[in-house]
Structure formats: structure tokens, C-alpha cells
Image (cartoon, rainbow, N blue to C red; front, side):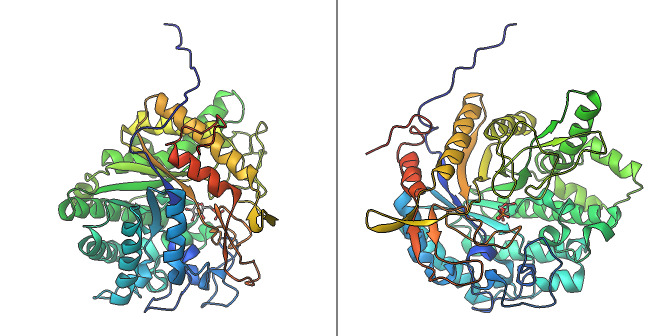
Length: 482
Ligand code: BG6
């Protein structure tokens, strides 16, 4: 059979496509000790994932104030509405609701804050998309319990989910259980609250923690289905397509092995059981997990959709001399054909089409791109009497990625929506900088903590507004909607 000719897909995206932006509580809210909030692991990570956690909170931690969304949420949501957002992804800070993680009763002040955020979103007709746990495990659960290595966290998490579903279930219809759940095997502290450096953590303890999170995610899914029958609950994965560095079968197999390490999380969330290649990894490495019959039953409660972040692809090589480059959580061997961002993350719009096709064919579940964007050093300039950023590089990056989303939809994949990462400038997760900016909205705050916190619309603000207003029709054809 001859190959179908792929004419470039053009025109609008599917009706009801959910356009918007994404954030996480610890990176934008600030008010780290207000409103009865307890400490989270982020409060002892002033330098992102680069250096070991500090004993307690320190003032150099930009996240203590972040961009002060806690007090400015109404103004920020109004700006999102001005761009026409259909959806806003944000996380609930677990330690605002349960300051120690293991408390019996929730903190009403924390719940009241998110109720106010939801009021504001409703006022503007913006659908909330809530991440239940985004790298924000309460510090007490890390320090006292060893994070997700401890089975007790399943119960604490389920209790937290029950409170969220009971309080907000009538208002929130899209839920994500854990941000980038597969990142735990790379960054056990930020992702799993495990206070043991990766190099010292045994594979046994690591995979037991993975198992606990997977069971917790499945239990949350079951609970959401019981308590909010019209809700859709999804998993969230760091999507990093892995290409073999060369056509050598050795490289192809190495690339397959590395891809499996992430696929496993989606396979379990979508198929309800451990895949054979992961069971083999356990056998080969003498890993014997504590898996109860109840766990096995819990895991059969599969998600309604798969969401993921996409920033870059990587290569893998069987040659031990091939060196890894910088990248998002899962760094890989750099691809000699690609350019990179100022932080060394390689830019590969077609990788997004590849991964959407992969996931769609593998799981046959609707997909949601809940993070994508470029971190860049923006410069505020004066234009037509107001301050702005001429961020054509951001427009190009997002445009090129959206072209590929449209291609993947034309290939047959069901894609629910697209929320660009850091739709307003926030503190970076990996480097804890504010100068690594992703937003359509510039926030006047610098890495040394100075700045007025004023907000300014970047050039990309108007571009994204046009994208949304045309339901994606302006993507890659240069036509601006009046
Ligand atoms: C994702 C995280 O890995 O990447 C976000 O879910 C993070 O929390 C984003 O901010 C971008 O990474 P960074 O380090 O540039 O902020």
C-alpha cells in the first residue's frame, strides 16, 4: 500500500478545544506562610533541583513571594480572560489544605482561598483544571515519613482528595492527580518528597514509592468517579520522545528501554496493571515490591484522559561515551540536528506530533497538552507609550508547536486542549529563577527579589489572544484576527 500524502493541516482546531495557560501554586502564589499554610518541600528548595534542600525556609527563596498571585489572583485572572482563556490550570498547594499533610481536619482558610480563585474563574467563564499535587508535598510528610516511600502517604493523599472533591467537585470538572508522575525516578525529592539523594536511594525503595503514588492516583480516580460522576480525571506525564542517536539497532533498543521508563506510568494509568517490561526490570534487579490484593484492585481504576508536558525530545545511545546534555528533568543525549533554548533545552516541534501519535495509538485515551513553552530572558522595552516585551521567539516557538498539534489532530488523535506553561511569568521549577520567563504577561520581579510586581502584556499576549479568538485558525498562516 502506498503511503498517504500528508498535506499540511490548516484551519481551526476542533470545536470546544480548551485553550489556556498553566501554573503551579508554589511557583506563583507566594504567601508561603499565610492563611494557615504549612511548609512544603518547595519552601526548603531555594535553588530548585540544583542543590540539596535547606533545613528550613530562607529569604533567598523567591517562591516565598513568587509573583504574589495569592493577593493578585483577581487581576491576573482578568488578564487571562482578556486573552480569551477557556481553561486555567493551577495546582492546589497541599500544605494550604493540610499544613502537615497528616492533619485530621483541613485548614478552612486554605479552602476559602481556592474558592475565591474559582469564583473569579467562573466570573470570566474560565474552566478550572486542577493539579492535586504539583511538586508540593507537605514538608512534614517528607521529613517525618520519608515521603512516598511510606505507604501511609496513600491514605493522607486520599483524605486530601476527598476534601477537594467534596468541596470543589461541583465546580471543577478536570483534575490531574500528580504532576509529571514519571519524574520521581529522576528527582525523588521534588517529585516524591523522598529526602534521600537519588544516588543513595535503593531501586527497591524508589519503586516502592512509585507504586504508592500509582495506587494513590488510582484511588483518587476511583473516588472522583464516585463523588463527581461528571468529572474527568487524568494522569500527568513528562513527555520526552526518545530518538536513537544513530540507526544502530543497539541505539534503537537503548532508546526503547529509556522510553519504556516513562511509558510505564501511562500504561499503568490506562491499562490498570504493570506492563511486562517493568516486571522484568524488577526481576532483573531483585526488586520485590509490597503489592497487596487491594492495590491490584485499586490500579484497575483507570484514568479518563492522559495529560502531559512537552518541552523537548532527547536521543539515547548505546555508546557509554555519549554524554547527556541539559534538559527538563529527564536529560538525554543532545540531538545534533536541533537548536536549543538559552537553558539548553532542545527545540523540537515535530517531537510533539510524534508523542501525541504515540500516546494516542498506545492508550486510545483523550490527550491534554498541559505544559509547553519556552523559558527565555525577556527584556522590557517601551513601545507605543507602554512597556512590553518583543518576544517573537516565544511566538515562533508556540506557533511551531501548535502547527504540530494540528497535524497530530489531523492524524486522528483526540486532543482536548492546550495550556501553555507559565502563562504569566513565575519562578522556575528547576533553577528557581524568575529570569527564566515563560509568560504572555511580564512580571516585574528579578532574581534578587527586587521589582514592583507590576504586570505588563508582552507581544505574545496579543498573538495568543488571536490564536484563541480564531480557535487556532491563525496558527502558521500569519493572518491576524481583527
Ligand atoms: C515542568 C514542571 O517540568 O517544567 C513545571 O511541571 C516547570 O513545574 C516546567 O516549571 C518548566 O521548567 P522550569 O524549570 O523551566 O520552570
